[in-house]
Image (cartoon, rainbow, N blue to C red; front, side, top):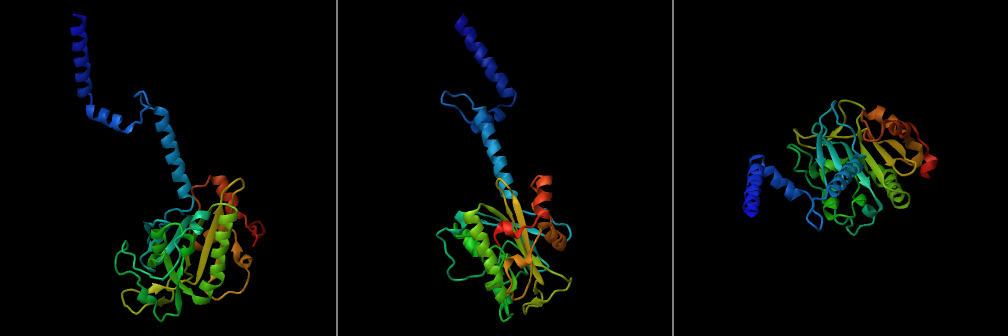
Length: 289
């Protein structure tokens, strides 16, 4: 009799569970991790959630706040993020997290193949728009910062990651700053970088022979760099789109100065007090410039 009662009680419990949403119960069984003895491991779930939240904070340090005063399409690439402006046909900004592994990978810059970015609607910038323009296709996130991944290296040559840049600036001062950032990443710690163009007038010079596509030529460029760690610090740079012969420190400015010039809000995911401190300080000596 007791055996029959037990079987009857088990059947009743199973029926009640089915009526109360067996489907959601099945999902819980599928997603919750189990220990060796078959129990659900709630601590593992909590740890996984904490790790996921922590990773999101780290990867978001470099991305500026959303823009409302100009067109913006966010493009998430393998090694960097782009805020694309359909009117200028250039990025508003490009942001990336730079580590030593990114600079020392096996994927080297070989034959340059600049390509249209099919993620943005036509008309869009093409390689031909730069032909005979006397401007370089200036990388915002450099190829040298994407050596750890073949796809990231290839994507760095997309037209949404470049701006018309003075040849001597591109191969000289700007290249020196890129090399300095890689030196910092290798010797001092991870960096969170944002770079992009500055347009001083609403009607900048444009290049390209197509009537419906004219790529805007920046008057100046900016770059901001954040280094976390025991003593977080940040530094900004604003340079004219010209051949430069001065030192890197000549154009170093506080990050909040770059914010005023560009209208961008950098590093919004830092705690407010820390953000205010690192953005108002500019100590080139601390960066060995």
